[in-house]
Amino acid sequence: MRKTNTTINPALSRVISETGHTDLIVVTDAGLPIPPDAERIDLAYRPGAPAFLDVLDTVLAELVVEGATVSAEVAEISPHVLEALRERLPGIEIELVPHVEFKTRTRAARAFVRSGEFTPYANVILHAGVAY
Image (cartoon, rainbow, N blue to C red; front, top):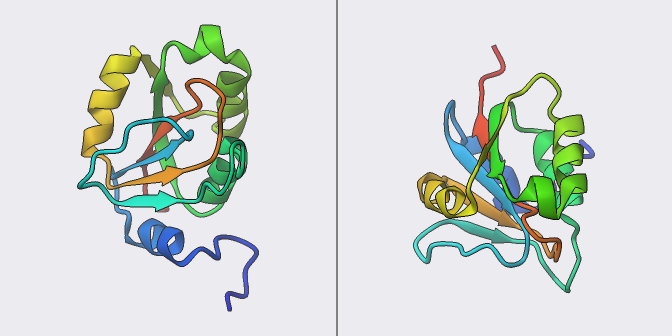
């Protein structure tokens, strides 16, 4: 059992530990398409749970992030999600791209961490940084 109050999911802990500088980790809602050959850490267990922000907070507690990408549509459809991302990533550039491009960019991700979130466009590509 881990001593810290961070990630206890073994697959999520492993992926975060193995992530290197510039690797991409996607934290997703329940509906984002995940390529069949991509690593999927599916934490969803019912509609809405776990929440996107709960999963994101868990990942951010351990992962150094130097950038983020989200669908531009989030600003209009789910602005509270974009606001929450800005609060959680102060000083980090959040790039907004059309959703079609966002889905294309996810193909380069090291892993997808799927929440049970049912809020439209509650997805983010996290660009891993370094701790030094």
